[in-house]
Image: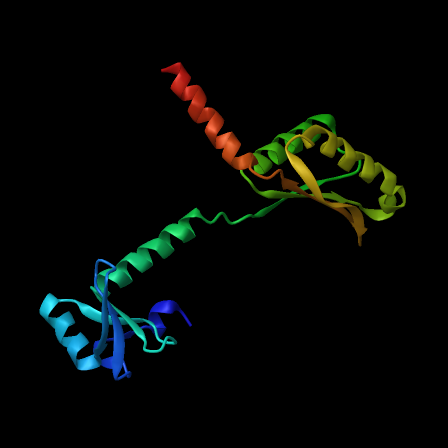
Amino acid sequence: MSRDQQLRVNEQIRAREVRVISETGEQIGILPLREALRIAADRGLDLVEVAPQARPPVCRLMDYGKYKYEQSKREREARKKQKVIDIKEIKMRPNIEDHDFEVRVRNAERFLRDGDKVKATIMFRGREIVHADLGKAVLDRLLERVKDLCVVERPAKVEGRNMIMILAPKPGLAEREKQEPAQSEAQAE
């Protein structure tokens, strides 16, 4: 249950006496509910029960509509700041050509700099699974190229006909990458 759903406002308050706090945060005192509602109406504000478990319940004089708006605004800001981490997959074969491998390395570096995890998959076909050491060597080469950008979240492991390794970006890497271009642009001006 969210906080604003459990707040009681004006006539919804059930207590006979309430401790009233003004809109500036000063304590007015313990008043009968009717008196507190009258003060709120005189000031053009709402009486909002902020601590119902207290004896007597604590109520604050505030503009409830404005309060709800500011709460939703804060929640939107918090959601905006949350970074959803995706898992990007890079698929390779155990006998991958050099140029194809370089493209996969560049993609892995870009994904890690963006703050995403990388799932490196070696796909075996037919009897290639017998030579799992070739697939492990490709994953080790990839790790060697991107080791300064990541940490191994899950080491190379064979699952069915695939060998999978998951790499996670080093903590704070995406923020550093965003700050560096901003600093170089500031120096260019």
